[in-house]
Amino acid sequence: MNKGLLLSGLASGLCFYGQADAAKPAKKAPNVVFIIADDLGYGDVSCYGQQKFQTPNIDRLAAQGMLFTQCYSGTTVSAPSRACLLSGLHSGHVPIRGNKEVEPEGQMSLPQNMESIFQVFKRAGYATGAFGKWGLGAPGTVGDPNQQGVDEFFGYNCQLLAHNYYADHLWHNEKRVELTGNYNGGYGVYTQDTIQQMALRFLDNNKDKPFFLFLPYVIPHAELIVPEDSIIQKFRGMYPEKPFKGCDEGCGAFRKGGYCSQPEPHATFAAMIYRLDVYVGQVVAKLKELGLDDNTIVIFTSDNGPHLEGGADPDFFNSNGIFRGYKRDVYEGGIRVPFITVWPGVVKQGTTDFMCSFWDMLPTFAEMTGNKARSSVDGISLMPLLTGKGKQKQHEYFYFEFQEAGGRQAVRKGDWKLIRLKASQGDRSVYELYNLAADPSETTDLLTSEPQKVKELKAIMEKAHVYDPNWPLLENERKMAD
Image 1 (cartoon, rainbow, N blue to C red):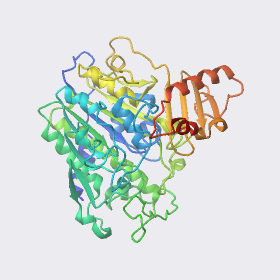
Image 2 (image 1 turned 90 degrees about the vertical axis):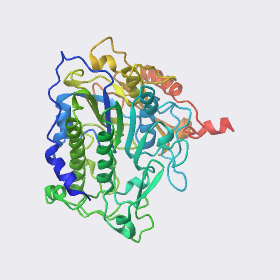
Image 3 (image 1 turned 45 degrees about the vertical axis):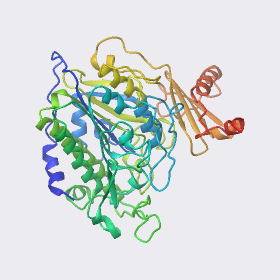
């Protein structure tokens, strides 16, 4: 591990954007850095309420940009959530609706003919890079990052292997990079540090052209493990601990998706998010060093709510804030995520309760670069909101589905939200209705007292879910198709 890079980031991460000057015209072709954490809960950063540790670099972004309180991820697990982000489609339309593994390594592919955010930027003459976790197509398939408009990829192609931070290999475009220091259970290379170095190198190499840098960091996804350096020492002994017994050397899933044992899960979790915060500070410091900070949009978010695996304890850290549920739930805690946008001289500082989603990103970036989406999308452009110019369109509704755990669906329209559990059981499904304005924590089910609202939202739910034979959420869908 390169401790010099990381520890210097603790200091260099204190360099940030200057205060936005609303009178300064935005430059053409702004660069875009899109940072997406993995399983980071709404309450896992201090600007969204975390009190057991601080995230100063992310907080500074929030102070100098726009902080969203009602942003939704694509859905409640990684691959389909990121597919919604890249495609502009919600999870009832997107071709990736779950975490489906393929052999020998990787997940089901995004289709070749689907336009993605990367292709939007490529059409506008941008260099594109992705560094971190992919999970949307195995090496050599049509879903491989290089086949989806990514000029340079470095990281984990397979999100299952991304469960482990001391993996034996990563991918640089189509080349497998062996990490021999991690062979035979070794701890030579903390992969996320190496991925971070490659991302910073991308900025150096593309400083003279417009670029889109996608940073799907693995942190804080389980497993819980960090290098033995000053960051873990900062948190060690701060919290009560309950050791987690996981999958170690000799276990069949060791470094093949199994989570390692961790004697200090609370301290390690805090150290991981602090490390993520350092990475954010390093990226912003690099932009400033290269003179790019005034013309670069930085977005920070997470792919879904907090996880419960590997010894993680979201209740201890209040990771989902006031919201009910975790990753894999379609309650607010599983799908409402932090979302921060900094665009110097354009985006006004402050907080917004405007409701938006991951599928808004493609049309937003298309308009930003002077393009239009080439295919029909579910998202809307947020450019009027971000720039303060023109009337901002609003969503009629938001739709979410989850293929596992018996099938789960949710529709939000205005203040109202309908949830369907056990969706695969047809008429035996269970519905719940909440008014989020009065009850954001989803504690009081109003299903029996609001029959008309239930009928209205059920109709939207049925319309929003389009049958896909690869993802037969409803029991009778497969029977009807056979």
